[in-house]
Image (cartoon, rainbow, N blue to C red; front, side):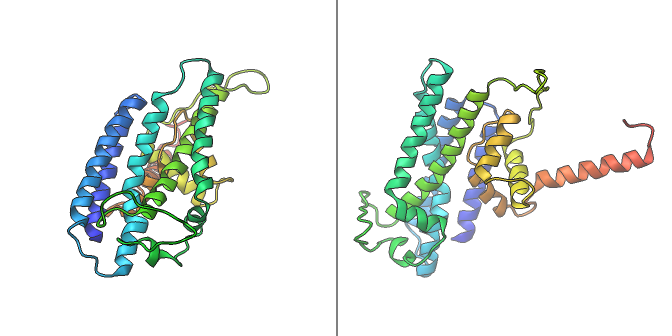
Length: 282
């Protein structure tokens, strides 16, 4: 099961990355992504409904970690499409207020699911065997009910974990849009002259890899959300679902950090050329 899920997820991330690199308008991109994610989930379901877990530990792993990796992508792009399809055509301030209202709506979900949110962020496992299985036990203080007539693939807590992940990254996206709208086209220095823009011309996957590495190495301050938003604004790129890319990095078989390796080899090559031709470079 593990190998099948890894291969399917790697395929999903490759398709989403290829789609992202096409530079389509946001609504077209989100619509196509929904189709890709839906097809991937159908493949996952077809496999799992006929699969017998080797034990409760494997069953918990699937519903708590593996399935949310797939489902959160579909939830993310569906909600992204809904949000962007309804954005008002009015002033910049109207659009900012619209995005703020969307963030507020997403935060309402977090407020209503505080226990599961804390359970997720603190990586607890006390109730795993009761929650993340094909037939979860009734937990009085949660009072959750699964409306899907599917006892092989559906799990309400797995669904909510997926929503937490998707909404977390939607908020990052929305904050990036708000920041872009607030700061406008360029920014002023103390002498009122505009600094020349620098754009990130690589893929979003490369951008995520660089910012994640800076953050994990503690070379920048702040949390990862702020870092993505900050660098995204100044490099004219709107961060999307970087969490999913981080998971895809871990699943790579040959090279987990191609962008960092390229940066290092390019710098070393430049230094070597400078040493060989010290007057030929400026």
